Length: 165
Image (cartoon, rainbow, N blue to C red):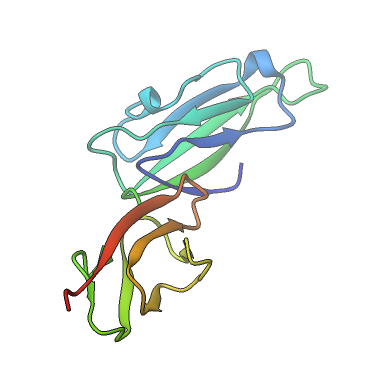
């Protein structure tokens, strides 16, 4: 596998090719003692694909070593290391949260991001794809944000009212 970055709300896939499946082992080698983060994997032996699920207290990265007998060989071991970078889960909050349109004067709604891994992609229910939108009509506004980890999108909704006349 190439090195990957996942957010803490997501599951990442690690894979290896060119090794006899029954001989494959996955083992965390850093940080900490060998095997410290093996519990994050759904499979640590005899699997060419394994999935990592971060748990509470995850480190900023984990190096996993994958070893096994090369395909076509009767014996011998080949090893490689993959780094999994872990970032906080992606969250979005629209501001202002309690917006009101006064006399048709436009206001700006902004999707404020925390966590995840840039770059971010935005999709509003208005079909705009920018971090901020300018609106002049009351209604329900929804933004969906994805990041470079390809984990599920974060969404937020705000109801914009009209000022009483």
